[in-house]
Image (cartoon, rainbow, N blue to C red):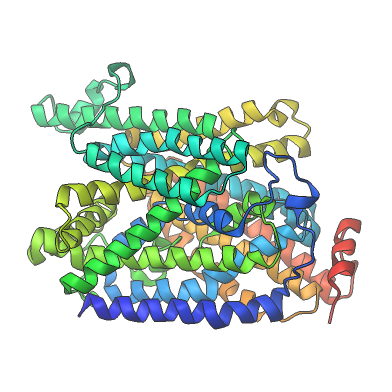
Length: 595
């Protein structure tokens, strides 16, 4: 199978979806109003509510949602074959993920920039809101824990990425200060910053800083025994675990500070620079595919799965989460993006378009891991890497990095530089997702503090520290981070569940407006079936091996069932012509009108 054929078909599908389907949803379903006063203008405060140019906001939104997940998920899922992964990425993005992101952004804008959890109270009731907030908190907890481990692993495997990643931070701050203080345009400063980043990547070959010794955690006797006894190999493996733990803690310290800064200071300029970086990366990878013309070595459908591999149905739709549809995107759309939207009509470009960009990233992961990676390790090496589900899970990101490196060699870029470039792309997006995620966790804890009158949680610093502590416990609680990727299936399930619940809220709102709900209801039902099925399978496995993950998963499942029951009660009231909602909600309905 030619990788070029997959590239061309995928690109054509994404362009067609944005050109036609997003316009239909925008004009006929959500009915965007160019004269609507968005929360960014209504509540402008210079910190969270900031009217933002749509291209800059696209950069923030895109890089916040495009973390490591759209790379990791497809890199694992190709073990079942390239065809199921490709179809779910393309069709899921166009008809589910992009509609979900677009809808969450629009719904939040129409509710004063409130998060999807808070909006749930207006649509489904106060108990539903609290339940949804808890589910969202657990999702963010897993997102940040997984990404902390992914970043740590990439720093260890690709030390050349450490210098450029950290140097990008002060560079972004300089751009933010320049733009905010002088009101200068951001385009050229961000392009200069991008060029500096590529200079940092070149320097990263030769400058590879390491964590100070006091950040390393010495291996315990139990860890040495688990790694194979007091041998050199065991000491190396256990020491690596200690270094990984040090990087996880370092990232959490960074997120504590970054998530409390004004969005213009670091978040917006860095995300805008990262959006340029991603487009360059996509262009380079696509150009390499066209020049190298690699062959996809993975089978279309793998009929000889390893013994430890679960069935692709329903696990495929959970493993590839952010590359097709992601509940986390709805949290970003309603948590930070809606507070920066200048015009409501920008929601189509930012929300739907941002998800199409993420679908493109997932497509590159499929191409890099099924074709580029085989160039690096050979066909036999590829089959050896995917000989077990555990190997595919733990080595997915490295397969992508090495695959990109091999493809870029075909267009004259040294493999070492290209591998650092690919690692920096993944880490940059994961870091962006982490500090956005911690910021959102702070919002949720503050909301819960207000709901239950817990004064200490209403303090932003305390809420941020509490979020970081929970992330650290989960990330390091599974073999001190060495088994961190075991969280991935539970993260994927919770992520898709949150997406289904967001679509449920959007569908309920559309129903009250007497508009067509099929565009949101169909993917909602599909996700509920897949996530519930997958959650039950995983709980059975966790019960035998991982009590921490079993406890978290069981709690999320109970919250899911409870929230669905609350939704059924709310829908029965709607069907029976009951009260349409709170006074605030009635104002929204009166402003929107019904058919």
